[in-house]
Length: 217
Image 1 (cartoon, rainbow, N blue to C red):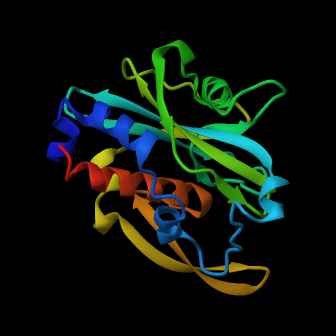
Image 2: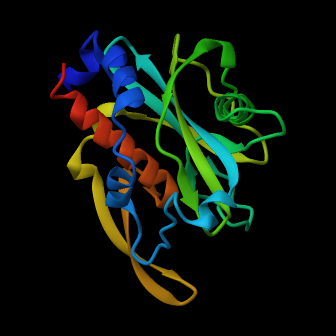
């Protein structure tokens, strides 16, 4: 059992790192697919992206480990059809990224936003193919919820442990074809699901934070 997940200092120390010491692109690029365009904050394209937010919702499962939910989107033929993702979506007028992440999680997986304490944000991640700038929000739940997948949007909800995210054995690469061109794509393998693309890059930065935590608590 991973000692990190049992430490009473886990959330307090994670909160401090989220405020003071984000890995940024260094953490994201570890799981970046080959050939993916890179848009850095200083470029004008970065500023033209539409804001969106996703939620990493940590909860303590059975008093033994920290976990968070991921969703599998329905197969609908759209851009992200059938893919694994964090709950989230675009911002509505007047919303902060935190408000949007909580609202989308409530809509997509039935999460009661009043049970979530936001402890910080990861680095924004540009997604050139869809024109969004995704802001990952990290929150802590008061208890393990009952998941209610949104009909027509979410096929299923499953959870991943922090220790599995940190496990190097859960990572692999495969060749995928985009526009008839082969690209090497890294992914997390949380049996039976493969997590790749933007979600994997976000989780890669989160993993970097968790690895740093092991040296602090």
